[in-house]
Image (cartoon, rainbow, N blue to C red; front, side, top):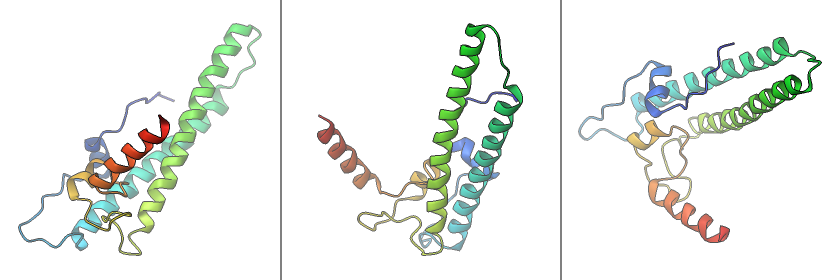
Length: 150
């Protein structure tokens, strides 16, 4: 398996789905059918890509498992598998977040802030398709988290 440690940027997420950035039209209704389809396509393609990559990692670990007699080689392999498993755990959490976001399409809540209910915005959603807070609420949440951590 070829290692892929690249971080997904918003343009990568759009290219995975095979879509271009959404171009809003003047006086267009927010989260109309065309916009919803655009974001659903992005989220579903992203989910499929992560699931496929996760399955590849599991196969890689199964195929590459060896019992090295040299303790240094064995430790090196265990560390590599540990990193793969941590990465898999992050991807598992991301899969849950994407699936939770996809459920918002059935309740007509996608694209709106979970806290205050205002529009999150097309550009923000393209940069972070699983965003559940508008920029103002997200900023306040980060400030609160920072104050608690201090």
